[in-house]
Image 1: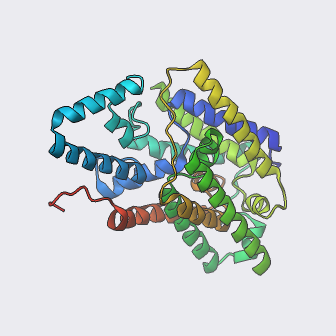
Image 2: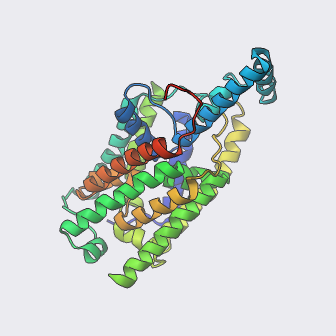
Image 3: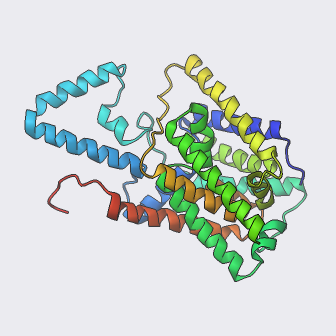
Length: 214
Length: 140
């Protein structure tokens, strides 16, 4: 398959991310969908937001509880009202927007998170069918990967451990290439800039090491 | 309803594009990371440049859209990002890529996918155990 040139690739990525915001009403952020699925599997029914955001909400709740004990309920009500006014009268209270970045839109049902992941699978399948046919490969159909790790147990161990690093790392940093890399960096968000520099940085280091050692 | 349909449709389109761009190819990603071929790097740069203009346009043209969620730095940002990058370089996959690779018939991506779920769940457990803020409840 001949890959798209850089300009078309960049244009396609930008259009998908923009259309996602305009029609799905949230940022394109794929690792977040993994997190939602994992949360449901771990905890049962109530799916919760990103870990970082949750801690923040808990901290806020604790602060409010302390304020409640100290100053009584009116103080909090007054503060919340003032804050809501300052923010242009957002429909949700401050607590809500702190608890979930996407509080303004209702959360997507769990099946749709799985559905989006399934849709990615279909997209890859379609690409191959359009290109002239699907051929199965037990590895990654990559000369470089096989040259580095072979096609036996070592290669599958690398894939498993690498996968664990991806799952752990994206959850820990709160995003991946789509949420941090594309949508966060283009909005000059500090967390996304740091995360993106970090994952491109280690990506480069590990790849150069592979090149040198294997 | 429209939102649900668009979520699924964009998933397919995104997957198709990632495949055509070559982001699903370990060799292409490796070439990006080792500066052997700057095509993907430039593509990424173009996407970010277009989006940064796009977000400004969205704000101007649709002032009633919900606020963009801020992405502040927190304790996990740097380390988490660094670990993810290592995994990306090894497997040639980021979370969405593993699924697209699987759709392309690269069955090894199934192992990557299992790893992603395991890693995500492991971090969730570790975060809960060690990093979780206490809300001061006595009920534990």
